[in-house]
Image 1 (cartoon, rainbow, N blue to C red):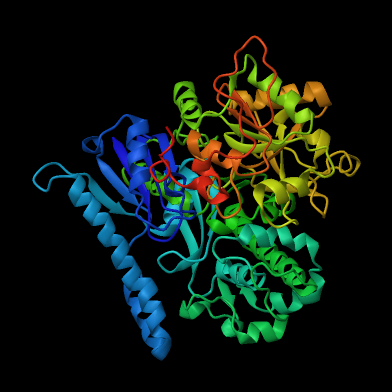
Image 2 (image 1 turned 90 degrees about the horizontal axis):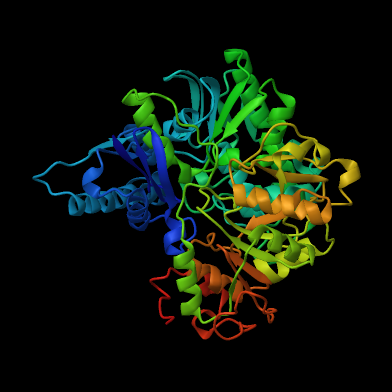
Length: 602
């Protein structure tokens, strides 16, 4: 049985293929098109999934879509009527936008399968069941408490429940406009970031502020009942009208003038981020305690975009009875293609629960032959390394910044050793250098450590595993000065644990770096620049490398440098690498355009 899972209704369009319960491949459309957080129908991602899985469209038996267009239709219509003159933008977003999305799907469906022949059955899965049900079915648990929090799906914003075996039990849900996700997005907008997309920046800014200054005001906006139902004081928010704004003038009167994008941060911006972060943490803890009382289990599955708040996740594991927590790497809408497919397979079609989504490397992959072809076409110097891990470790130890392009691509918003930028975490100026010269992003934003799983407790106040970089913990006090490039201003770090079974080459690199430095840790950030998707193809990797302050590109078995390379036993192929990008990809904006858009290199 072959299932094609799709997400395309909201943002982060994506596709996956599940064959007889096994996840073969999952691809985010942004990686194929260069359109970050793509909201388009993911035709390119579908094509990639079919090609990578070795299937044809005729092999697909079912299509699972992570949205149910028939759910809450009457509720939405009544809500629109209640808005009176303000109903226009709401109707445009909730009805006309959905109609356009569905039109794109059915147009593709009818072009792909003949009306007179066999066609896959289409299933529309509730959005939060795609989040939480799918996450549970790929977790290592046979029973767990379930919590899904995001902006909103069809109408639900928060969903609480319990699962055992293949059965899911709902305890309750909160409905729009009472949304913790939108509450936090309002702070994101206030701080000059893009709501629905830049909440990670708000989380990173929060430790720079004083949470006490605005905490009481922020806390007064959120009430949670004993049953776990959310109620917001909506008087300070504009998002209930879906106008495109999250904050209204009353919000500014309460908290001060908002920051314009690109303007300097003022103290009150940092303090608002800190206060709203504290409220979201305490709200999640309160919901978890509702689940503690109802379930008694020590297993918890978190899902939805708010579960990407790794600071809150860290508090959950420290401060609740839940000691086994699973958050899938694509916890936001991107992962609902996987969730819809597995809710269909396990929950509705009663397939056996046997797949565990334990690593994120389920995306596209490029052979050494394809990589070398891209290098030759780009007319840059390169060489094949006899020992990629040992040589890269030596380069890192010399203070170089390395772009690392290896194996299958990660699925989800975090680079986890497949498409990463790497550096030595012990160098004091490294964080500022990468933010300014490579990522071109805000200076306060921290970088994460990748550490061998067996060594975690030697450096961090954490036990267990965090393979998807979705837990924040304290760096041990006596190790903070040793690790300045990955220690945030509050002494924390967003941790990734790496094992030999999940990523043999990346694990091998960290072990080689440990031989030279005594530290089994590497600074890891995503291989992209600000506001661009993570690099997918060899050509895009080369473009990004030459349009930023990266020093070395390690791509497959090959190494490219911007400075002249010593010629050893292996020959240098083609003329010496230019220090600037070849004209075909001179600008940073070209770094993430698709190969089809920039396929002029010969």
